[in-house]
Image 1: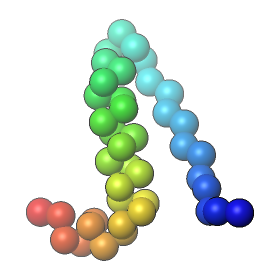
Image 2: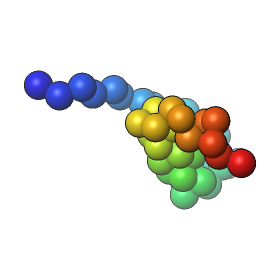
Image 3: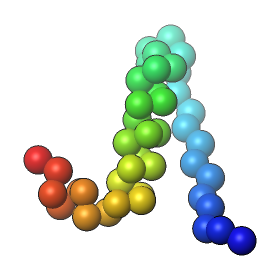
Image 4: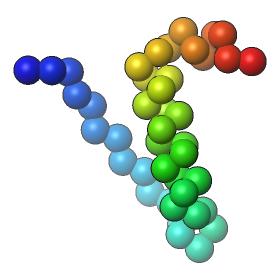
Length: 42
């Protein structure tokens, strides 16, 4: 068994491109996996 977390994102496709939404979720994943990056990221 490994730790898992599901994240979902709802957005208006007329305003936000899918690529930008994926980039946002990738960044959220990075910050959840490395919370110290919140302090060190300039």
